Length: 439
Ligand code: SAH
Ligand code: SF4
Ligand code: F3S
Image 1 (cartoon, protein in one colour):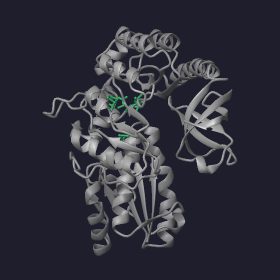
Image 2 (image 1 turned 135 degrees about the horizontal axis):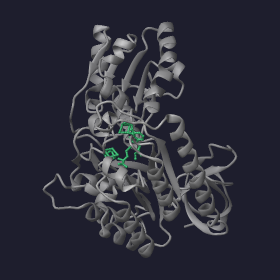
Image 3 (image 1 turned 180 degrees about the horizontal axis):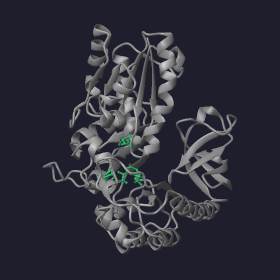
Image 4 (image 1 turned 30 degrees about the vertical axis):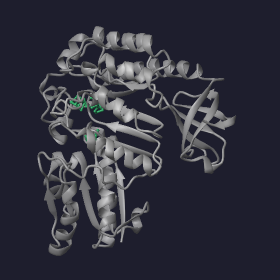
């Protein structure tokens, strides 16, 4: 039996796909990348913006065709769109066999059996939950791994649907995290990415007295673990101690993803972000002072309801001041049930698109300029596979997460090598393997 799985969302969603695949393998399914050859299809969906949600609709027509050719194929929809739409998915698409939410992953094998047995569509959604088997995954890569440290979110940024589809924030106990990472390292993993919607608030719900920076210290102590990443940091809880530990530990990457969202204090307040532009700049100043070569990336929303041209110009000003290595930029998308979706919004989408373009052009120029600074320098690159752009090249990531393409033997996949950067594009770099290439 073959299972096809497609992931639509964030790293947490990717990690969920790895958990789903683990359970499917336990049930005797084998993974396939050929949807037409599969017996079971899982779409693991995202609903953070309307566009992300609509990607599901783009795929579902194709599934209908497959199902009409072979009625034994099981069509399963999981993830955050499933969590928020519930039965509505089956009402709209009656050929869907199973709809399961973000808290129902452990039940998935049971749902499969039930659906086959009864030959009926099933929808199972829980509002909250915490899976003790969070770490049982079928990993995509054998040299790097995601490690969820918190699930859910308590922040209720006024535009965001995540707290509604992921439930309340819950931290995983320290000893479980450490044991899991030690296990991964013993099986050859050299890079881990600690995951949480707001990693900085790690541990606040536990009685273990371990803060995020203390957790980082413990993870960093694990021998043979070469690289530690973490996402996402929230500026409101970003402490000085995190900067100190990044500065002092070699295996913590010098890269911080710190979503700004907006540059105007008025908009930040309306977004319920709990920091000001001055607070944000202050953190950046501290990072630059202590870790001069740290790269900083961000997320920005353009066109939040009530945002005026002069507010947007403050965002642009922040982008110029901070000089992010990269920014993930989004046009505001109203999400049902969130506070912001009720705020009156008088700026036309056309206008927002113009601002968005302005922001993109400014940021791309900065990314370009920052990338050019890497030319001629040598960096450690974790080789991840063949290049997506050119199959004759390898592709890897620098510590700061920038993609580098270079010539090399596929035997280097999964290793950290030294690469000298030769050319810079806006979103990736080209390089040559350094002669003494292992580090
Ligand atoms: N927990 C993370 C990010 C979660 S969603 C954090 O707090 O940073 C990823 C990004 O999507 C957000 O940072 C935000 O920039 C964007 N986003 C979330 N909701 C959005 C919405 N309704 N419209 C547009 N962008 C949104
Ligand atoms: Fe959404 Fe804010 Fe939570 Fe991030 S911190 S997931 S943006 S509510
Ligand atoms: Fe992630 Fe999208 Fe859900 S960003 S948490 S998969 S809504």
